Length: 306
Ligand SMILES: [Ca+2]
Image (cartoon, rainbow, N blue to C red; front, top):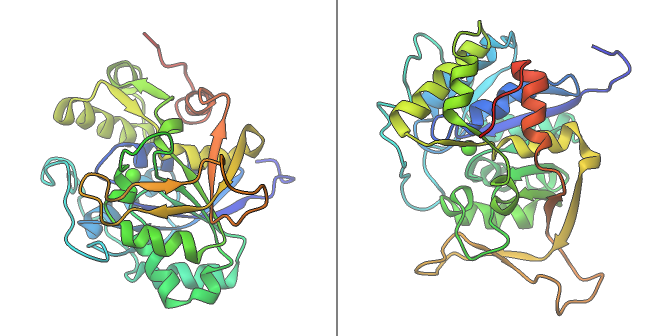
């Protein structure tokens, strides 16, 4: 690694084990010399199985010293619901892997208190971050959060926000620098799942660990496109000049019959130029660089495209 590169410290907060993009995003972070993963926290549902999955992947990428910490199983209100059958997707082939720590909110607060420049990269519902805000608001107010979440060109309630709207509302008002990577951006970049699997299926570790999940994604879930949603905030930390951010005042819909979990905001038609804002929405002109980064850094080969 070039010694001149100052590595940006990150905590990855993840619901690894539902959509495959968490696995992909962790692989990209692990292979990027600009970033230093200082901890992984798990959220939403079977957080112990998710922690075991994160441990297995970090170990495969020779990151055995990075602590993995279990977080909140349930949203702040209500119960957790998964799209997929846990026995198929979560908890598969985990052997003796397990977490190092519990109480993710404590870990997050302690890490940010020690080094406020550490960026929290959120790849799941924002429950752990909300708990950290409630635990130590004065510490978390100074935190920087890059979150995959929201759908800023529609009233569609995007998954991560909709699974814990109350947590999202606490976080957008409790953290001064929070940047969202919404579906209108993250759906612009994907691999063909089968082409990816065929290309990498016989690769040695650590890619074998990723290939195993791609195979599951293809066979058990059956999605032909492998979207890289959670890799966008990682990409933004690797290549900050590729991204711009639109500052807006957003609120989270928590009551709508069809829109609970939607983030709503004034698109700028009516407010003053310097009006108050609480989030930043990521924008970029070349989403294809996300797949290019995977090809260069993670797989080392071009993945065929239809
Ligand atoms: Ca995720």
